[in-house]
Amino acid sequence: MKNAIHIRRVLATAIMLLAGFISKAQSQDTTVTNESQFCIVTLTNGTKVSGMLQSQDNAQVVVIDPILGQLTVLQSNIELLQVVETGKSYTFTMSSGKKYMGKVIAQSASSITIDAANLGEIKLTTTNIAGFNSGAEVSSELTYDHGSRYLFAPSAIPLRKGEGYYQNMMILMNGFRYGVTDHVSVGAGIIVPVGFYADVKYGHQVGKNVHVAAGGMLITTMMGFGAGVVCGFGSITLGDRWTNATFTAGYGAVMADGDWNATKRPILNFSAMARVTDGFSLITENYFFPVRSYEYTNGNFSNPRITHHYRPQLSAGFRIGGGKHTFDIAGTTLGDVTEGDLFVIPYFSYAYHFNRNKK
Image 1 (cartoon, rainbow, N blue to C red):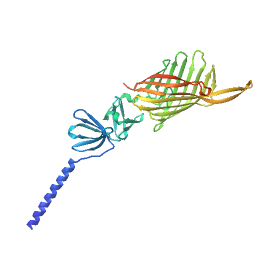
Image 2: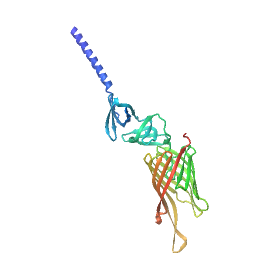
Image 3: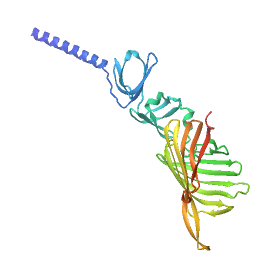
Image 4: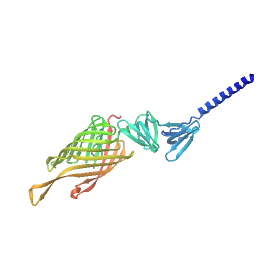
């Protein structure tokens, strides 16, 4: 009987010791695998390692670097481990010095997609991320996105209240646009020495990456040159403030030789931009003007044959810079390809973006 009690005590003690050993082992082996989280590991010597967090425990952290592959870092060499969690908001600092703030909606080994207020979705390349902070203040650079315009034509994306820009085109054209409210903007400018233009636009976001706008524009000459365009227009823009495409149609009148003639067909515009890097975007802006031609046969000048077609004015180029200052360089066509007199001239412009809401 005593032997049986002794054996039971020994077994109970052994079980308790084994349970304690297992519990201690579990507390030491806290391996976490989460391949969908971007992280930055700051070492005690100041070196930073970034990539997707593979695993971590009390001894080491394993990171998958997109270029170097799997890296193992000892915990004793780690000063700070930062991990990006999907669904939370961060301010990301890029290697270029720019900062972007938004809620992380997706992340992978190559990019992190954030939803930035009023800017839509922005995709950040992970290899260009220098650091990030949770709950930090957004840089004022973020608001200078230039998404409301192309080379000259506006998109349906509105300027925000207090936001605007000055633009110089080809040295001789100077103008500005300003956001009166979050939806209404006005603009005006002078074409030295004989031209003048003015416009007003109402823009509104109707869905994710979908904006619509309506407005009016006047372009005319002074000093009796007798040419101009006036029209009301409607636009739809698909995309965010960085990469988008806009289709615009407008009806109005065209002045030629001092006479205004109403357009029986709409004036059309298709424009698009695509951000390649933080400081470089591709841009195209294309107009299609309705033209009426008269064909006289057999010397009959009283009953000409009237035909209608669209005369294109095409432009393509790129935008350099970001923040408050940008430069546009492009080529634009003049003449009418249907008449064989089409040629290309260079176009360049500078824009300074301001925001009265920023101190």
